Length: 166
Image (cartoon, rainbow, N blue to C red; front, side, top):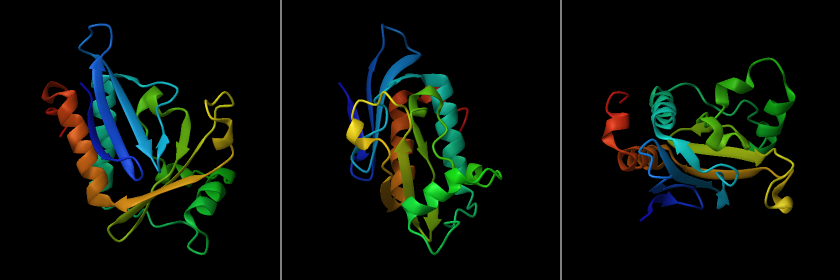
């Protein structure tokens, strides 16, 4: 039985069955802006995935300055501009960095007050929906909602994998 956390139009995670009876491989599907992020690879190696998600949680909670780098532009344009520069500034905003499961997207996160904006795009040429290629999608939500979804996902993946990291 799969467990869904969050809202697919903002950010959602669905934790599904174990893969081939392994307690370390499990199906996890992710969505943002009503787009399926894990369309290329939705089987996670649970220990690595949980560690990466915990790192993201710590980063989000740290209060790092994630102000949109180009305040005169909208989130999609800021995303495009960050991808065009090669000065190391874009790495400050990269999200998520959770291993192979999210390797098919390029995404950033910006914070304004208590709100997060996540512009993203698919980069693989063999994407399952050609109409999504070359487009930047944007998800917006209160930061606390994203944090809650990530915490619920980690709980569903099992305390054995997350207690040592939180």
